[in-house]
Amino acid sequence: MLYFILLSLMTSRAYSVDGDADNDGSPTEEDCDDADAAVYPGAVERCDERDNDCDQETDEDVVFDTWYRDRDGDGYGYVDPEIPDGVIDCIQPVGYALAGEMDCDDSDPDVHPGAVEQCDNNDEDCDGATDEDAVDATAWYPDRDGDGYGGAEVQLSCARPAGYVRNSRDCEDDDAAVRPGADEYCDGDDDDCDGKIDDAAVDAVQRYRDADGDGYGGRELARPACLTPGYAAVGGDCRDQDPSFSPAAGEQCDGLDNNCDGQLDGCDVLTGWYQGGAACASGPVFGDWPLLIGLIGLWGARSDRSGAGRLR
Image 1: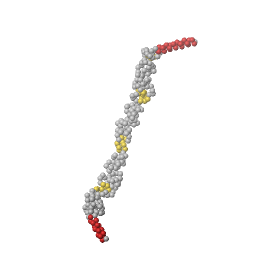
Image 2: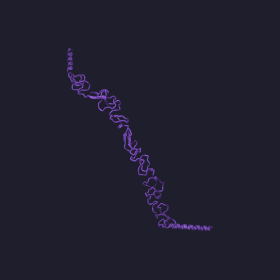
Image 3: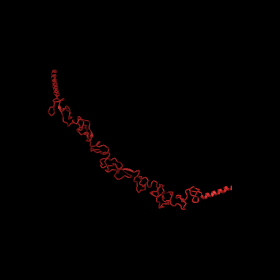
Image 4: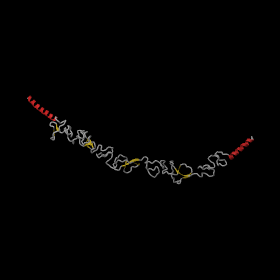
């Protein structure tokens, strides 16, 4: 029994001399805190007011930073007049932020470097400018001709810049007469900015559809229009699909009304003569039948006279 007691005492003494209670690899006699595995000779010194590397110095070789008051908790410090140089420490004090970009309003957590700028006449992002690049800025458009309608270029701004309007509906911003709602004229331009040229022009006149392009429109009802291709100011074309027929065409002996005056070849069908005095040329239409018609008419007149005599 005495043997085991002596053996236990010897083992306990050996452990206290050559042991490593915290298993950090350093013997007890070299470890300045054998109850903390993070403390041993050669350990990394930390900012904890302890001698982590057992060199009898505290917090040496640790980086110390400057910290400034951060009352609004937005992560950005402010130069407090009471502590203008901040606090130097290797750990962050409560209610302080690391020195760097400084807060321009430490009473508002929405105001700090990098914050979103808004149209409120305030410098949210602490860059020294107010309301620039605001997320709620209005789109403005230049009105160079002063007609109340803007062009296509856009400028974002909280306040209205001089010479700008809220719309971009002007299709020609260097002419005040051209704008939405303006009167349309027969000028080859889109005066009212509706995407159409010369439509419903106030100076349009009655025009006739000229399908054959001979300068004379057909006989259908005219409508107000500008003098554009496909329309004519004068109607009366009796065959608007054929440019050889029009009021200006020369009459020919072809059995057709070439000049659209309502008479075939301009001839008297009873006499076979032109109104000008010349005889119609012989042809399939006016070859012999005018004379035949004349004889039939003469015979009819004589029959009427003779019949009337018998009745009496």
